[in-house]
Amino acid sequence: MDLNACNLVNNLNDPNATKNDTDITGSSILSATNGGKVLLAQVNTFFGKGQVSPEPIYGVSPAPDPYANRKPPTISSCTYPGSSNAIPSVPPFDNTVTVTSSTTFGTPVTVGGDTYKVVFSPSSPTTPLVFCGGLNITSGNVYLNPGIYVMDGGGFTASGNAAIYGQGVTIYVTCDSYFENLTKNPLGGNISPKPDCSKNYGTMSITGTAGSCSSGICDAIGYCESSTSCTISSDCASKDGKYCAHPAGAFFGDVTSGQSTVINLQQFPTSSLAVGDPLSGLGIATGAKISAINTTLNTLTMSSPATATNVADEILGPGWCSKACTGGATAPKVTLTAPTATTNPPTGTAGMSIWIDKNAPVGAATTFTGDAGLNINGAIYAPSQSVTYEGGQTSTSTCSQLVALTVNMSGGHTTTFSQAGCAANSGVAGHGTAQLVE
Image (cartoon, rainbow, N blue to C red):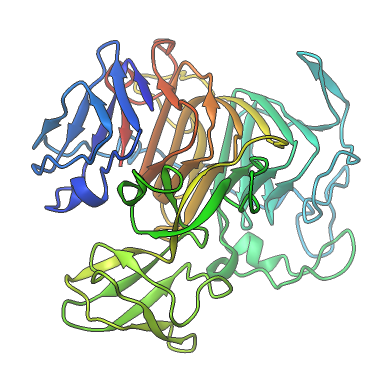
């Protein structure tokens, strides 16, 4: 990862943070150039075997949330698929149906040789278009005119060969009563499953299929998995592949030192994990496995008691030494530029390309994986989310920032965060001392 004219800031002041949360391993390289720095709240200097430049500065004061005082967009009703269970949008558009290459809406726009057949146009840059149920784009080309695009429930998903383009745009992910009250699609039929923010709050997912493997298959997060198990990437330094891939992803729960039960599970992948699967995490004993799962009580039992007490501890299932998939890739192309600031200090959505409501489920996954082509100029603000960049993204943005609860980056290419091109009115918070804040 290359940080150009910006800083990496890890606010977690924990004795194990550098080993488990700021872990630069294998052939990974973290480089801050053009005045950039690596600033860490913790004092432990473990960084694995990866390369870090310049030398990190330890024991710094945690950076404040740069967007904590921003007022989120105001929502008054659903725009799509309609303002109520009986009143459809005008013109009609059913966002509960997946957008594909055959979907058309609005007047087509051509940019850089690409024709966008789905075109959205807010009535003004400050009047949000509200998609109750979110948007799922698998292969269509979507053009966003300047404005605010609210995903009210369901989130925003782009995959396959989708292309999304927007200048002066903020995508805001939230969930509220407008989504939950829209139980019938005014364009036809019930919305199923019934809208429920506790079950389908939504997040941001931009994923490609990273290709093929010389043996086996390319998994959902862009890795050719070996049969060698692992916990962290340093376990794989001299084995099959360079990365420790966890196909089931992360989930969260409360662990108590000396206790074997994990309570208050969040984002638990019931279809991917089973009794006997290994577990790892800050409070999880080495070699611990799942011995029981109780979906009614939302708990699981481990074969060994926890070694530390942690609320909403990030927990991982089985890991496999892996390498990035190659060949035959399908990857969405996303080009977004945030609205510029018209006030000083900036307000509202100025400088923010992607904004996930701070009330979203803590630790939910926001993903940019599988060689997704990203050119996002502006901040990705996900204060309660676990953001993953995996599978080899190439970013060409010149004014970017990522603020998240946790950040995981790996893959076969260089991911660049740069603020060398930020204008004075970019609206990106603190762009003179830009931060990747965890």
